[in-house]
Amino acid sequence: MNSFEAFKDPQLCRALLARLTAEATTPFRFMEVCGTHTVAIFQSGLRSLLPPTITHLTGPGCPVCVTHESEVAAFLDLAGRDDVVLATFGDLMRVPGPKGRNLKTAKADGARVEVVYSPVDALAVAAANPGRTVVFLGVGFETTAPAVAATIKLAREQNLKNFRVLSFHKLVPPALEALLSDPDINVDAFVLPGHVSAIIGATPYAFVAGKYHVPSVIAGFEPLDILTALLDIAGMLKNDAPTIRNGYTRVVSDAGNPVAMAMMDEVFAPADALWRGLGLIPQSGLVLRDEFADFDAMRLPGVELKETPPLPGCRCGEVLKGKMAPNECPLFGKACTPATPVGPCMVSTEGGCAAYFKYRLDL
Ligand code: SF4
Image 1 (cartoon, protein in one colour):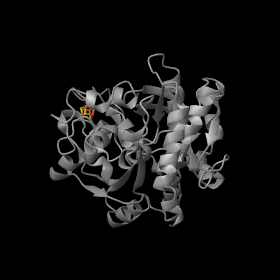
Image 2: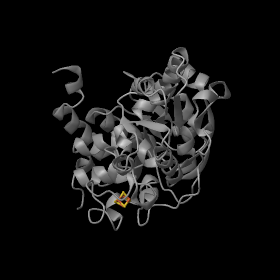
Image 3: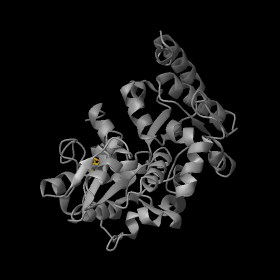
């Protein structure tokens, strides 16, 4: 058994589940804030094995899903410009915008949209299109932002004058604070994101336990990681001893990755940002610093965030806040399926609605 398989060991999983069932005598609701956790919990079958005292909520951990309506409208407007080539990760291609438009339909209508697998690939697109401005869509959390920052620096080194980034990056800790300060949201604990934490470490979450008394565990993505995190949470709740635990020490250090954080900090500055469902959250986004203004697509003439109505009938906003399970949305599995997505939570492979649909939960 290799070291990855060891984290899926069925015997250990069964033993941990038995301990969890014995420990979780008081019901609790935990939220994971990472699209990879959403999928891992369903894919491993854990969701259906959890004791009935534990309720799993999917939170705002899918970057494509939390990209605000007005941000989607802004990049669709950019795609419609003759002087622009959009470079994007593939998961944004089918995110619905106003009037049912998305990047795929825009491309069919003649827009120049290139799917790239890394931000650096967008530099090659820029080099191949000297007469146009190539705009990379910067959508992602702290996990993605350092690589985008490094790409911007590389563009400067390569003296590329036609490369820009539309930075809609989001930061996880301010979103947790927004959720915790909303009296309508009922969450007893968080399973914190392993990937984001690999960059920022454990320290930025201290307020979750310190100010809000909510126990939380940074977790990896294998069944044993998740079960151990839940067992930790059950123990902290039982003993009324909330704290932030790092359960993913093979990847996450408490101090995070200083090189990646320095890269991010050199290029980006925190700013207020709009989140789908959560609205405007102070200091929860990243904008390009003035020193990198030449690479900022938001500073191109005519680019702005306009007031944009929510998608008709879509309840993604409530799903992302854990206020509604995906299968409680009236459109789930009917008008809205992965083949005919009405909202981004059904488009993204990391979206809660797509996970519920794929794993046939309560269809
Ligand atoms: Fe939106 Fe579809 Fe999810 Fe309903 S099922 S919340 S319409 S993505």
